[in-house]
Length: 161
Image (tube, rainbow, N blue to C red):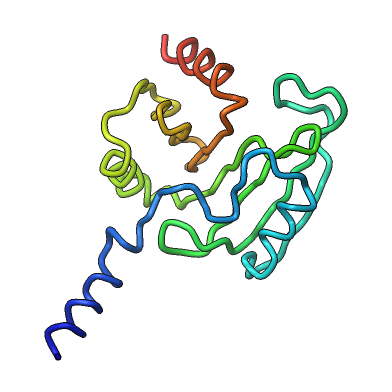
């Protein structure tokens, strides 16, 4: 019995478990701002803020872009600041900030989870098949919707040259 409990404790406390880079559970691509706020209820331990982004930076925004800032979202083994970007009332993109000293472990975890990147540059490392990327400045994870796949692929290709 001790072996089982010790094994479970090692599994739960292992770096691989604590450094999960998968899409945050609160993400449902295309969800409305209200749905995102509801999904984040109780998950932003240091507060939640909703703000309008004007001018919008998302491609093809016809009406408005808002951002839900979640401070304290549990991700990659610690509470993080995350930005949920919503264009025309559809969740399109999520940025999750990481401390600069975690860059090497974050990239290693992404390579472990997603394999070889599709594109690399000094600015980012992209895993397009998984619609995710690492950005070096600021240090953060990017997750993006299927709707933005084509736009990001074009940006990654142009920025890598």
